Length: 350
Image (cartoon, rainbow, N blue to C red; front, side, top):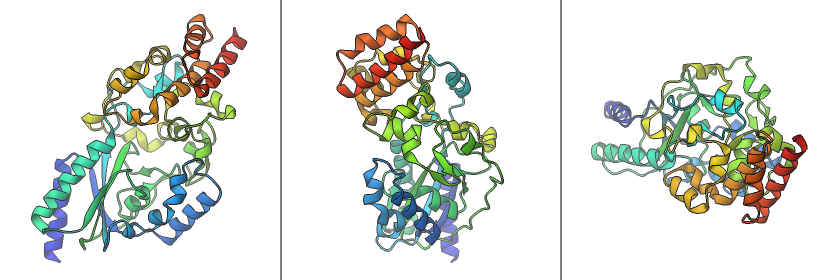
């Protein structure tokens, strides 16, 4: 046991050297209550068009199936709050600006965390010898928040994100392995009676504590969903062109958020770009600017779709109307349909 305790101490210290601000260890299993909640969520269709959620449901409920002989989950947290970015509230208030979720202003977190987790696993191997493991960061059917919460890295907020006393502006990563490391106890929830995230969600996507209906969620609609954005949610999207942070922006615990890792500070002036600037990009510019960014994976068509909706919610002036008209002929049918909606919104207000 002494050796395992020393090994846990080593991995904790090493994680700090790689910039992780928290590391806790829990079991490679999902509680029955969380499994039942996932089943009910899928049964009600709350995953929308994310078919992979249902297809890999059993793996989400059984992380031990992802790694043969898995006993332990090493959960880590990496903060990303971009303290140097233009204030989120100011951006959201200016409907001619483009709002991008804070997590996507900098480098792609998948690559950053995966590299650091692999380095952590390599260091562990040097000391403990070969062991069976896989590293994950939102890259496989893993219920990250549940695993992190039961390991004591924080608690699940009512918005379904992991919270601790430093807030929720953090990425999660895991090493699922067969090392029998000493486990940490979970921590109590400190959300209390607060319901701000539910009350202030622009589309009412948080339909109950700990339940998000993806079909109503702006993050899902602008990132995961590939078809037409339902008309009923377009006005509520405002100028949010990639993701939505409202449930985090209103959370009282996020008043205490420290500055995030330098890798996630804004790139290419994305925290201060106007809708017209971004809408003017051609596909080559989109692909070049977003090299190494999580935004790249939604593709140019969805990027244009999202921008068209946001411009429909912008100031109804000649510049916005002309930009939409000029782009229409060279756009796909999907984007054209959203441009037509946007033009209807703007011309009706003139």
